[in-house]
Length: 212
Image (tube, rainbow, N blue to C red):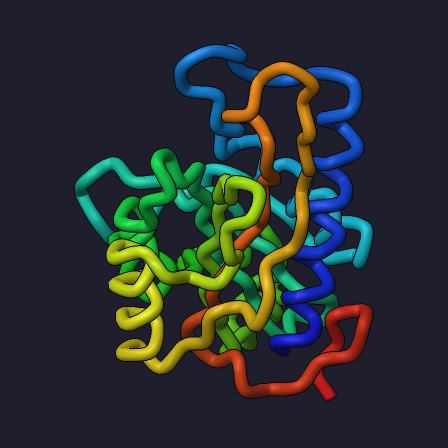
């Protein structure tokens, strides 16, 4: 599962990086971080290209509080589901994702579909899905010459919580876009996509997302 998710994240970073060659989706002075919805968009594309069923802004059906999951992806044959949350790590802080780790662990599929409306086969397929994996990812700016390993206080807190939940932080982040401006040294660096996985990540899947 780790290799599959890593490949999806690599493609997401590359896809977003290509788009950033044509435009910058936020202001270019002050806060310039890439809005998180751009991350979820390109990840959803990468998952859909692997023929997973992909949805955005899913309601947490088992709570009265209004909450939304960024992306849900269901593998062919309902063999597993991915619950994904994305963040822009403003100021290099990963504190914003601490709650997201709990959210992707807590999210669950709605299984109360009426077979008279959806058909018994559809309902049975949804109810047969038992393997659920949570993914939290975000874009982090790294100045030129700075190590890309997670070393800041908030970054270490994030990694520690992932480990406490039995999860794994990516071995190496994926480059989104590098910048070497001619006259503005503060923009000398690169954006990287970092990710972590919690839940049932130990299962193996092939490149298409089929459980082995």
